[in-house]
Length: 382
Image (cartoon, rainbow, N blue to C red; front, side, top):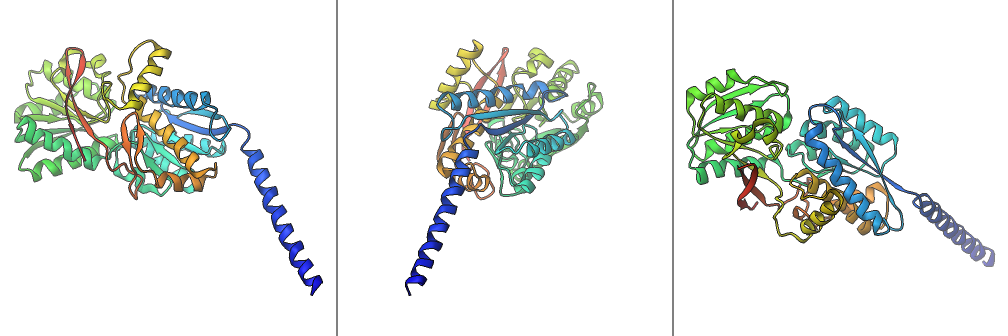
């Protein structure tokens, strides 16, 4: 009997030693820097648009490290260029996997995030896209999250603003057929605008690399719509508005969150009066946004106006918050903690994730271009 008891005690001590040993090994492996990857465009057509995304990620990592890191470990940021293409994004994701990163922040454009998400879901690496709005991004799997609203919600708000606030009853929609984001947002805008009683007179397609939009703009001008909806990115949308005004088109222009201040570089004052949706504005009163503006100004000497910067900052901080709540650098535990995120207070507002990894309570802000700047029009809740 005593031998039996001694055997049980020996067995329990052995298990305890194994557990303690594994814990020490785990702690030792986490004592070095914790790698996270930022996947955005440094080269190609999206590079200018994505520049502020890298800046937001760097500011967040620097801020976390200045406070002692996470659980005593500093963050190591690995920046990977997706070369502005889906293929480049896939290769970038595979590179992140080889680096054995704990998480990935990226991408901005939906066509890039879709390919990244498939790779990272298979590798079981948590991914937070700061700015990709296509619904299918987070549907890639349970390791994929986003910090921004999706296109279903955005399409509904844009249609509502066009029909109710602008009073539009007819529209033309011009789509960049090379980008998933543009096609998806156009689809939902058309669907909701028609449901409200509006008419879509013409849907024109163009390629993202185009510089001449005469064909689609000629058709748009013939139809004389109340509004022309262009759910594109800053370069192509700016060029379209510039050419449209030169052709004498007087319709109200409306865009989505792919627009921004850089459109002035492509169109100048031609974009004045056009409205678009954003997740964030420099003057929002959120405490974290004010704090971010202060640290940005200290580093760069001016006020940030690019929405991708606070979205990527929030994405890194969401990861950090999940690590702290999980008490671990284990990817599955971080994923579980991310999925349980409720009431996270960020620079772009509060974030609570639904079952798909989408924020459920984000406000959508309507802005208008006016005299070289953007002005607040209204905020619309979910």
